[in-house]
Image (cartoon, rainbow, N blue to C red; front, top):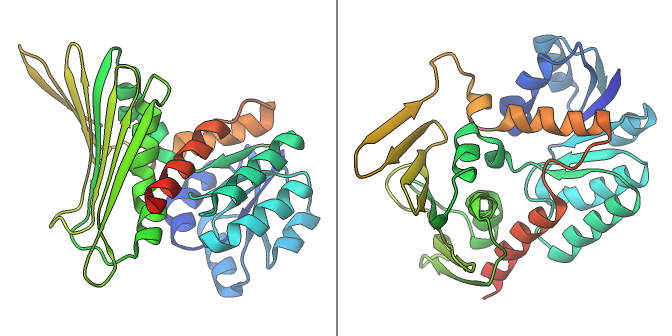
Length: 300
């Protein structure tokens, strides 16, 4: 049975990962790791996990096959490097890092050591987004993220929030990038107000819009093809429009949220790749491109 570490047991780990992992304990041996002893004990008891550790060093000593890293972004670089040098596959929450050279160096190290470094771009694995990806003859893609009220500085907002829509939009494109332009708009206090990105390929155009002060919390991706218009709203409904009809599809009521949002499929894909020595479910070149586009947007 493969041994899988989970480093960092904060909000994202508790909401998006541990509930899925708890159902897979007959296939993998999970090791929870955090310095917070009370949290370790509480979460292990809640989900029935048998193995816990206080530090990364303790976890590495158990020789895990792979580790999920859910620590703050600023700690990612050093932790990922330590794990890769120990011969351990790594899954990490986005972003891998905000320094593009660090991102490239880590992926180069993973490749040199024949290890997986997988970035948690869950929206690629959301079932309705997968259906958008399968549409032929795409012409225009619009990926929007709207927040009721923001407050984050541009660097944090772009790499914490906007990167999801950047990556989703780039994932949906079927042709190589030909040109990118972008614009950052800030408030008087210096917070991100809006972020805009335009990407062109030979036959497609992508518009990514992040509005931090939009009066509503909304995520919407629209794909216009030569035959139809398809729209996914909040990852949970898909609407297809043609001249003749409009058809809206939702998930059955019992479908778990983590399936709809792509977390569960991505977790399974990563663990399968570890077990079978398969391909990275989030191709390194595409993950690097998403980070690079965000960095260039902030630098323009």
